[in-house]
Length: 128
Image (cartoon, rainbow, N blue to C red; front, side, top):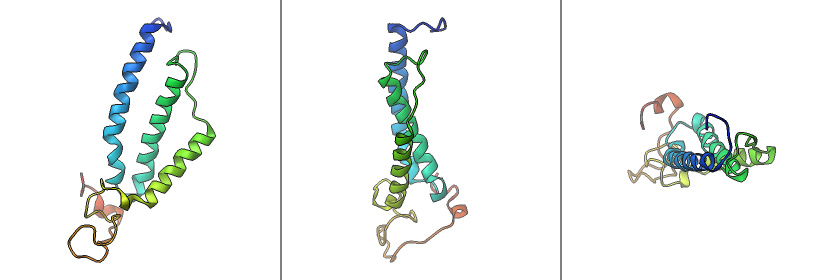
């Protein structure tokens, strides 16, 4: 790999690295539902964008030595749209903590009509 030769060994290394990276992205995906609303879109875009890059690397046959895995403007807009749409409907996700301010009314089971609304500073470290 240090000789910058694209061969079967390179493909196998890239396949293993991509599989490992997909596992890490999957493990980190629920984080978006747990961070403050001001960070949520950034975390979501990081995850979705990283997965899109991995898809492109596979699409170009793992040959990152001679081809750059580019994400088209249309794909970028799709990723942003999904992240923003998910932000609007985060309260539907079961992975959000029951007492998270983005959860719907009375979902925490504590009898509150809509849960407390917190500013970003009050959430810092709360759901670490």
